[in-house]
Amino acid sequence: MELKKLWKILYLLAMLWCQSKGEVDGENIVLCNSASANNSVYCTCDKDGMDEATDISCYIFGPVDRKNEFWKSFSRQSRVTTFMLTSRPSDPLQFVPMETLARIPLVEEIYIKESSLGVLEKNSFAYKDHLRTIILERNEITGLRKYAFSNLLVLTRLSLSENYIEELKKASFNHLPRLTFLFLDRNNITWIEDDAFIHLPNLSELELWDNKIRQLSPKSLAGLKSLRRLDLYKNHITILGDHVFHGTPRLQELDLKDNYISQISPHAFDGLQLLSTLYLNHNRLKELPDHAFFGTPNLRYLELSDNHLRIIQALSC
Image (tube, rainbow, N blue to C red; front, side):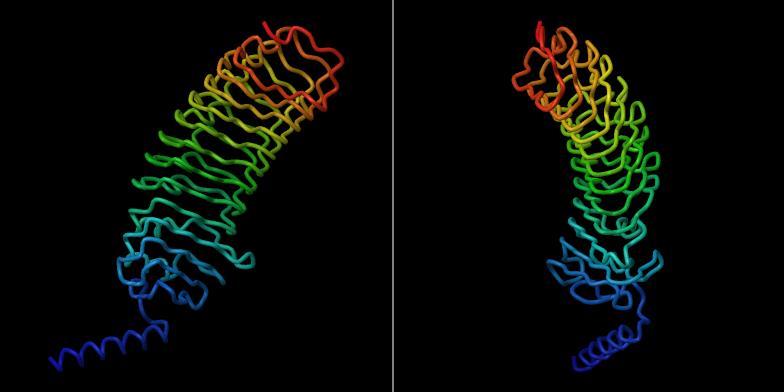
């Protein structure tokens, strides 16, 4: 019995010595509530024991590359369901730690903030069977490759707010059957490729406010058959063409205020049978076409203030 105790003490002393010398491999790094990666990362956990933590928040204070042994330490916490990673602005993380995410297969929520991720590559978060929420706000994301978000079968919430994305391309969002909320506000989006949202059949809310979108085609919003709310506030839209919202038949609220809209085609709102709230204030409208809202029989609230309208007639059927 005494010999076993002695061996245990010697083992612990050896581990402490290795950690102090930085010679221990990643799988033996103490992850929770201790500094690691040459004191560049500090992680807090809801529980300290091996394979006990379910909630881990890590703060990066210095440069950490893909090969750092720190990332391997997550193999000892395979029950994690919530993972948050925040960088110091002077030393931002510059990649999505995909290998680390593979070591926490039960993760349901991922938060990465204040990093510098650039272009998100193909399958950055793919094949996570339990992942329901991804928050990637303020990460200097400049673009999304094809299949950047793909094969996330239970993902319901995705936020890419406050980044530098300029274009939304087809298949960047692929096979996300349960995605309900998508936040793309406060980016630099100027263009939406046709069918960019075609694989989001259950999306209910799409936030695109405070971007630089200039125009929408009848296929820009194709496939959004469950969309209830669309926010395009504070963009650069000048014209609403015919059938431009054809892909959103269940839309109930549409926000188009603070754009540069000067022309609305006669059939721009056709097919929006459930639309009840429409904001067109703070635009450049001088007139409205006859029966402009013929296709919106349930419209209850219409805001047209701060335009240049001279005469309004025959707004309904």
